[in-house]
Image (cartoon, rainbow, N blue to C red; front, side, top):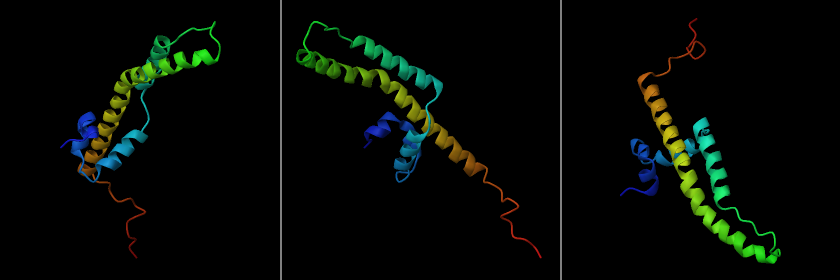
Length: 120
């Protein structure tokens, strides 16, 4: 049975089951690219613009309920707006990890001169 991470990132199926958690951690540690950063910034600006409210005439204690309701509305919007960019990053990084592993398997590193035993 597939778990949520495997449904979200089918690239995880290429890893052995014992390696999947490590691959997931490595993929989340790698940096964002420019498209993802711009998308995240645009999503944050968009959600902020959609959930803005103005209540200057209300007292401070009366502003609490509208602020909480806007936060409850904003969280799902953030998930929908930011989610695709975060998933893109994970999938891209998992593909990069797979490609790196496959190239390492096909092209094993040669011994360097410092690692070779010295002949008398």
